[in-house]
Image (cartoon, rainbow, N blue to C red; front, side, top):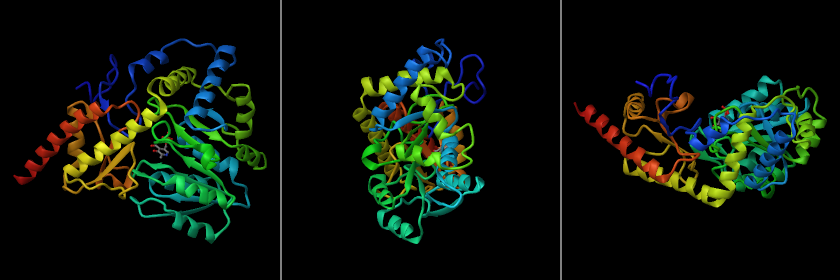
Length: 375
Ligand SMILES: Cc1ncc(COP(=O)(O)O)c(C=O)c1O
């Protein structure tokens, strides 16, 4: 069947309710197909400038916004390499799989990487952050805004000011919330805020974005062995000329220019954030009506991805397969949560109406699986 095999002729016809990569609108696919000049040309520089300005508006920041040819993980590694000196400590606040990954990247790069966190499903709270900060001096502190594995959104508006008071640089992984959830970079004083574009931006994978503060650029200048490909200092120099250090995926950047224009000038920022809030709420109401307990702590649920426990003791692998046969992809839990949870991604361009339609089909499939269990 075309939905489950590589469709050479038409491409995928699946409706993706995944936490990325997500469904790409036709207008974006058309942008990707347009021809471009080279990355060392005036048309490219004009386009690059538009992206930088668009990102600054989206992120409520005057910080320089950089474009990387990588996925988000590349920029997570860049933070570690550019900002933590040999004799310094980095604190990695983990609430799930991606927090663990960042700490692991710190260790693999030979940095003095300390991990602190909470039980998966829970969020970081101000009191706990204060306790962690009392334990030691940290030069850089890294955390997720939205932890995609557990479906938890950390209260960053409350905890980042506390972290900033410690004098550390703060790096925020907003991979699965940037362009879906409001993040006011300058108000909070976030030094690096990063994401890849295959999630709330609704673009194909291959690009990552980050806002970088002056303090972070200054710090990077003093850090040895920053590497070459992700050197913030080199990026800053090229970015001032509206360029990237190496050849970027130019069609992707064209599509991003168009998507930023759509987000800022057609849908509108507040409207986009509100739509994501409604998508989150609607999914949680559905879960409650189905007697499916949320994995995420009450009050800290993500509005871009919902993670549900297996409260009905269903065969989630079968459920995901049956959804595929109906033309929808949802996903089971991430990593160690694979059989314990399943996830519905509701980010990017999904409308409430599309979500409702998918949930109706999922409800029928779950009813069938419950009936099967009675046999
Ligand atoms: C919170 C978070 N951080 C980092 C990543 C890694 O992103 P990428 O695959 O773009 O490197 C993901 C991917 O799902 C994510 O959800």
